[in-house]
Length: 241
Image (tube, rainbow, N blue to C red; front, side, top):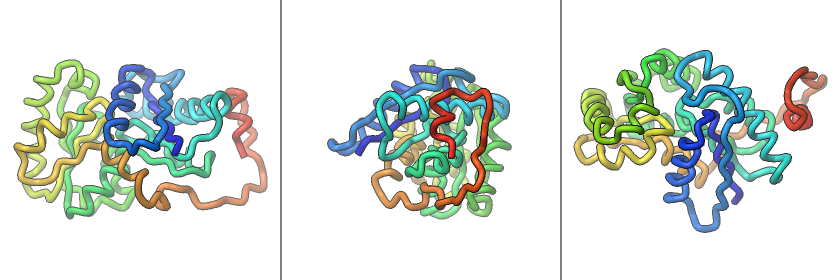
């Protein structure tokens, strides 16, 4: 299996964190490729950077296909899933976003809460939960003021800040999602202090690809007129239906 890890942030350090974490849980036969968005925000943290990241994800996928061929599946490494539905339509492949995968896993336990960094994510993640049909299962989104990037830069402080948020989120919940590409691996340090399962969003995304991927593939469409986009990269234009 050729798995493309696509980081829609422009930070290479996030790409490497994603690669390392997915490699730790991947089967030996999985070949990992990892790419970083060529434009946009270093760390997606609001509606504007999220919107730009969707285009950047499509462009990064197209350029990877041009250089190395089409993968078998794609993991979009942002908790918020920018560009995921467009990538499913464009590629015809299983495309997994961290937030959708983590919410699906958490909902298997019952009601769940989300903990993440960056205050702008609260309404964005609530909207995504509604779109995915998980609004009734979501007990709340608990955001801490530092962004995922700031938390990753100071792991000890992150454990303290996130630990408190996770304990609060666990009250009245059957599971807690720790969301964020930059927070990959931190759940292992926090989980022993909680009475409910703590789900690492990157691990959830990777695990979703090892199982039945039918929920992560777009339905086949009959397109009668090409999109005819102007100003996009040549690599992306070649893939447009």
